Length: 187
Image 1 (cartoon, rainbow, N blue to C red):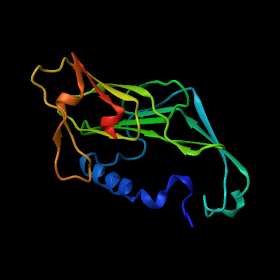
Image 2 (tube, rainbow, N blue to C red):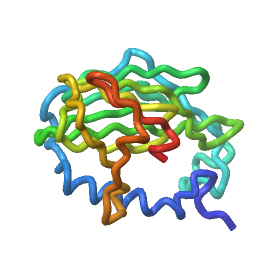
Image 3 (cartoon, helix red, strand yellow):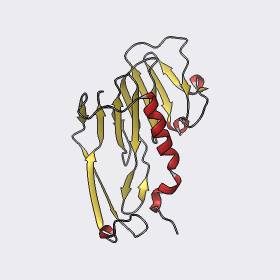
C-alpha cells in the first residue's frame, strides 16, 4: 500500500536533510526581519483527497482548494517567471549573510495530483562569492548579478548531501552579469 499519495513523501526524506544542511549556510531569519514581497497573482490548487493522500479523514473524497501568491520574495526583488503552461510556485529569500535561496514548488490538480511544472526564472540582485541555494525544478534559471562577472570566474555546484563541489563552469552560459543554468543541470 502506498502511504503517501502521488508525492511519495516517504521517498523524499533527503529533501529534509538538504533543508537542515542549508541552514548551516544560511541560518534562519527571525520573524518580521526585512521585507516581504508577493505577486498580485494567486495560484489556486485543488484536489479530491483519497484515503492514502492524507491522515485527515474529513477531506477524504472531497474537493479541497488552496491558494497562495504565485511568487514570494523576502529581502530581495520578486524574480521574473516565464512559463508556457502551468506555473510553479516560486519563493526566494536573501539572508543576512548575503546567501540567497530560490525554490520552486509543485502543484496539485484534480487530474494529476502532484506535478512539477517548470519555468524560465530570472533571479536578480545575486552577489558574486555568496552561496545560492537552488531547490526545485526549472526549465532554466538565470542569475543576474549586481556587477559584470570577471572573465576568469569559476562556477561550482554541489548537492547539499555530497561532500564535494564540482566545477560546472563549462556547463552554464555566462554573459556579462548573468549566469544561465539549464533545468537538467539543476536536477
